[in-house]
Image (cartoon, rainbow, N blue to C red):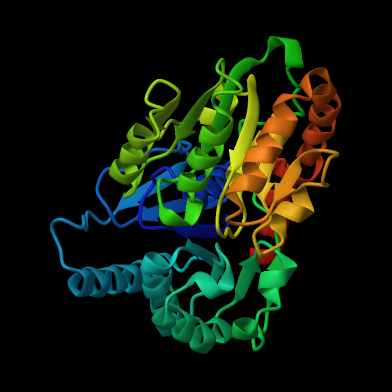
Length: 359
């Protein structure tokens, strides 16, 4: 009888945690495990899921149920499901699903694993209290960097490891980067339109060099609560014909791997999926050096990309200008970028997950 593995996350929408869950679920199902994916909503389906994965929708859409009622229903559903299926491992990401999964897992003696998906200090007080108390009681916790693993909140864990995020499961081999001469005069960024991602800084940095590089456009892929704010900023800076909010687009980085530059301006990150993907596709990349240390683990300054300080608009603007003026020299950088594939390809990372949760 094959082992059973359950993945649980609120929705299958355009987020980094959602992409990793989809990649892991597809991999486990292809390995022959009886694989389930549980979402709390009724219809989200942003990332493709293999037909071999049984998708279960709780249909607890936010507009139909209150927060407390939704939590109780999640817990009750999960408790019944774990008792019925007796899974060998349950993996849950993000607090809204993680909390009821952990409680249901403890009450049914189910092996539950979770992953810290952001900078440790970025969570609310209630989340940090919950994790300090309950994380030591579950089967294991995966971190995306050693710095976060060593944070004071996680000192009492009995089982933890560091695993970087995998690339999408359709990226199966290193890809030859596009030469500078064939790249479009476009700068791209891919991240939710939220304060954490600091698109405001990127837009201001671009505005400072826009007149000097009139042939360039900035395309921002993602959706979120700051859309209106950012659109107003673009209008105030008179950049309506230069800066475009493109919405959430599946495969945005792959589709735009001929861009001249990728920029991530985040204030903080757990693991920057978009940055890692841009590197794998050989797009010259700039990132803020946020405090989890992952960007500096992925990027060696000046060799396969560039780093700037968090919140430093002038620093980012100057770095963008520097890179755009490099021209053919960026071809050297792009060939070093794609080496990230060696440690981030889906098969290698998923095998590490498999060994950790199903010993």
